[in-house]
Length: 197
Ligand SMILES: Nc1ncnc2c1ncn2[C@@H]1O[C@H](COP(=O)(O)OP(=O)(O)OP(=O)(O)O)[C@@H](O)[C@H]1O
Ligand SMILES: O=P(O)(O)OC[C@H]1O[C@H](OP(=O)(O)O)[C@H](O)[C@@H]1O
Image (cartoon, rainbow, N blue to C red; front, top):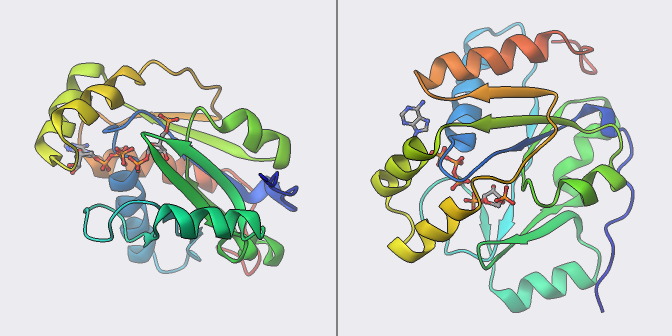
């Protein structure tokens, strides 16, 4: 039996970061975190950790690695506020990972473009940030990152065209710090979080 994720309260402070594989979602979020840390007056948004059926040592973000059986069990008992599937992997965000929304804090989740319609149903206030780059740039970055094999990279590139309606589009083609700055400037136009910025 598959459980439908419950509605997400206070979703107006949820930021969904999406974009094609290799666009630099993780990199821009990391650069944004560094930027905010430098400007100490600003409270950090909460970055939601992901549960993924991918090996812990696969590289990239620090995710919670689980096997498929564990993932399905967690999903069936309703542990996830958000969950989706892509690239043959399962992804989930535990309810406690977005609990900061209840305190009026901003919560950032790196999620899937294909899953956005479902997420918008559960979280009508969600703000969507698309991070993107041209196809040839994606191909080069995926090859350089070398986290996936060639077939998996091709499959990721084939999804590059999935369209999104976003509140902010960041073209991450130059310095990653510039992309993070664009995201930051946009975030500063939004209502401050509980406890201020
Ligand atoms: N502005 C940039 N300039 C040069 N390289 C970049 C830039 N942004 C990201 N990269 C590099 O591109 C690769 C992909 O970046 P990253 O893993 O952040 O993308 P992603 O969108 O999170 O991808 P995925 O969805 O596959 O996890 C990484 O090796 C990263 O170091
Ligand atoms: O192609 P779409 O549906 O946008 O997204 C698919 C998935 O690919 C990326 O995952 P990863 O970080 O590369 O594992 C995204 O974060 C998302 O979870």
